[in-house]
Amino acid sequence: MDAGEPKFRRRKADRPDEIVAAALAVFAEKGFAAAKLDEIARRAGVSKGALYLYFETKEDLFRAVVGRAIAPNIVLLKAMAAAHPGPFPDLVRGVARQIVGLVETAPMGGVLKMVVGEARNFPELARVWHDELVAHALGAMAGAVAAAQARGEVRPGDPRTYALQMIAPLLVGVLWRETFTPVGAPPFDLPSLMTQHLDTLLGGMLTEEARR
Image (tube, rainbow, N blue to C red; front, side, top):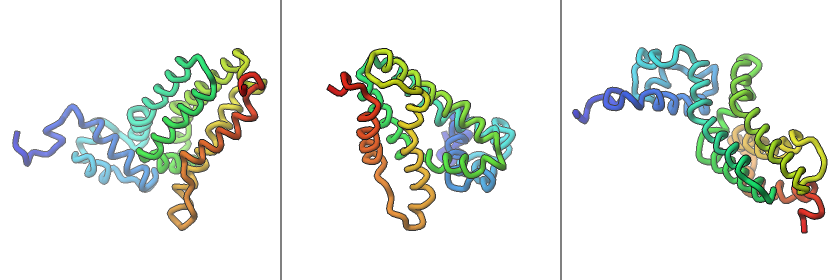
């Protein structure tokens, strides 16, 4: 194979994944409105015409970013929650480690900021993000809370609300990192943030029997 041959010809089977990876990076850096298909194609090493063979619009690309690059992590989270028999704190801390690792190693924060900031003008972004990610993650953790309540580990309360309480500080921390840290605000260490938060939250959620 000629070393000078364009990579989109050398690895035709990889082309959609390379385009999605490029789109993820551009969306995180530029936002949705400012993202240009020309730049995404260039970063993926394909022509704009080749990009259109796979994705007709930026909305299609965003759906692919969510479905190919982000949603598989939610599948793993759901599997962790479904397979965990207890104790509940071990599951919560394990899930938190997985999510923190994801947002620290992939440009998830920039995409989350994009969805929050541009959802009014592009409501389809919020719809896809919710339906493909948030609803599944929240549902998995709410189910885990309900199972822990049935085992007598967690106090009475709405499982879905408990699930939101568990993850909310991480979302705020990510948005802080993407919005305020670049303009000089002191950053938060996300692993430490979640450790302190879960120690506090679990102290209120767990029954006396579970805390022994």
